[in-house]
Amino acid sequence: MIGGILISLPVTGTWRRFGAITLYSLVAGAAVTAVMQPWFGILQGDFAVNWMALSLTFLGTGAFIVGANAVFGRIGIGIGALVTMFIGNPISGAAQPMQFLPGDWGIIGQFFVPGASTTLLRELSYFPEAPQLQSWLVLAVWAAVGIVMMFVGHFRNQEVVHIEGALEGEPDAPRVASAALPAQ
Image (cartoon, rainbow, N blue to C red; front, side):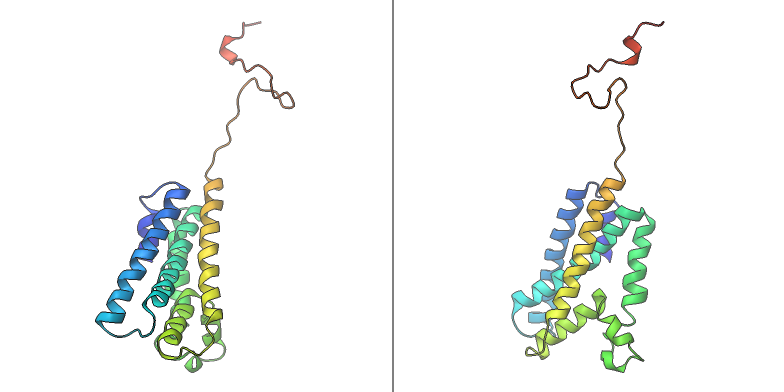
């Protein structure tokens, strides 16, 4: 969330935000993987695959927050934080297996970034034969939704410019400023 928030506030321009969130995701994914795998020994398996999983996790959350900010304005940062922290996190199954959550909440939690990323990292490290496609797809969809929202928000913020004197249907009509016309 912090990466998405920090990119939403000072960085302007859709392509700059896209580049910043992509770079942030790759760097943060590498840093967290470097701490959790060789240093602490929490993650097992292939370093590059764990790095991709964590980078996609950061991209999913960060792009959603940046995209929500682009579409809804500053309130979008709160919406992104609310969806991630207060909805997705409690039902993610990160603190306990998703099967321990009441009803279908554990299953629903797997369709949010915290649930999909936690399940994916568990499967990559400790259950490599378990199916992982759903977790990868959920993270990719959240990242794609955030990126699309970034570009949609860009068009929301564009102003329409009207040129005085230009007539519709006549592309080569002379454009004369109204101040240059004689008063009649």
